[in-house]
Structure formats: C-alpha cells, structure tokens
Image (cartoon, rainbow, N blue to C red):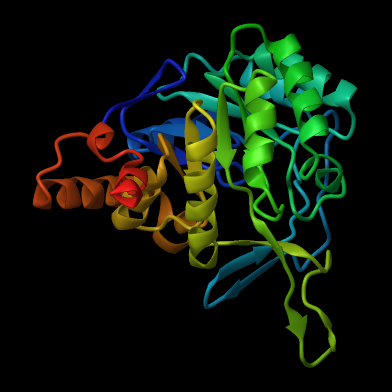
Length: 303
C-alpha cells in the first residue's frame, strides 16, 4: 500500500483533506497513528479569519453542504503554532489561499518556512468570493501556480481545482505547464438547500460546497479527464468513504486519495478502515500493488 507522491513516501494512499482536523501537531500525530498516509492542514491565508456565521453545515442523504468560510488562524500565527512540519510522524501538506497573486506568493513563502512535504494551493473554494476569480480561468490559475512556485523553492506544489467549470482538462494543462507538481481534484461543488419554514437558504452563506457520496461520481469523472491530459500525479478527492471508493479513484488515475467528509461518518479510524477494505479487495482480485490498477479504466476503454 506504500506509494510515492512527488518524491514523498506515504505508508498508504489516504490523505486527510484540508478543512478537517489537522489544526495542531497533536492531531496530526494522532491521525498518523490512526493510519492516515498524510495530513493536509486547514487552509491559511495572510490573516486570521472568523469564517461565516452559523448555520454553516447541513447534512442531507447525499452528503454535506458546508459554507464555513475557511475560518482559521493566519499564516503568521501558524508559523508560531507549528514552528516546523517536517519533524512529525507523517508527511504534512500545507494548504494556502489568497485574494491576490501577491498574497498567494507571500503566504506560500511563509508556509514553505515550516518545511511541509507539499503545499496545496486552494484556488477553488465554492463559498468564498476569491475562488470565483481563479477557479475557472486557466491563465489566472497558471499565474497563481508560477507565483507560488517562485516562492517555495523545491517544495512540491499541488493546485486544487474546482469541478464546476466546463473544461477541467484545460485548467489541469495550464497549471501543469506553469510548473505544478500535482493536482488535487476536486474541491466541493457549489450547492444550496432552502429551509421550507423560513423560505430562505438554510446556510448563512446561502451557497455552500457539496461533499460526501453525492460528489464522488463528479470527482471520479474529473480525475479520469485530468489523467488523460497531464503527466503529473493526481490526489483524487471527493466522496471517498470506503475502500472500494478509493479503488475506483485509483482506477480513474489518482495516485493518492483525499479523505474528508468520511471522517464525519466513521471518525479518525476511517483511514485504517479504507486501507483494510482496499487490501481485502486487492487480495480478492489477486492485485499485488496499486500500480497494477492505477488508470486501468482508461485501458479498458481502449479495448
């Protein structure tokens, strides 16, 4: 189950997605002991953010709708909190965002001082106005990629793409050509739920991001299309709650698999659960390594 992602050795392909848990050194170490292959920090920008007012979360049969508004400490506070990230038990991915190109660059530079294994760049949050600037414009996404790469030295950079655009292949190609080392696919999909009693959108932010099982077919489609387009690795993220979900994502072309909403369903034991289910499926189908099935859905299509 070991994989290598941009030169980083992971004990298994599961990665905690950004926005859930990974906020302290203690929680990161605990997730490592619980079986996560890597942890992505909550996204940070140049300032502390309170996030959106409540209600910010809503569970429905297909998954979750969230409009939390990226609450969290700013990058300066995080530098004091963590001091460094390369001395923890598992690889840590720093997640950043910004409103301007200069902010992307400056936050990335400060994040790189913490020595994360990788830096993920969120250009596509569905309930933040900044994401609507960068998430559907290949030229702007390429500029963000170049600015971040210019400020982080040799630390690998993964760009997190939105599923809501018409041609995700063009976005993937643009960030690859701009120097991205990996792509995180995908962010949550914009959605809304209306409260029938108040006749108003249920979330205070009105629009939130759909995650969980409802997102998985969209994520698999995006990973499949990106795999056809670029040569850099893909972190397949969206609706993975079981080992079979993770196998499906690998077959579409993912190198690693992001786990987010599934933590709400199964707790921090979910990483071990998914890995055990993956190993069981592989044993049943006499598959010795994930390399043997990575992207195999494309080969089946060619027959």
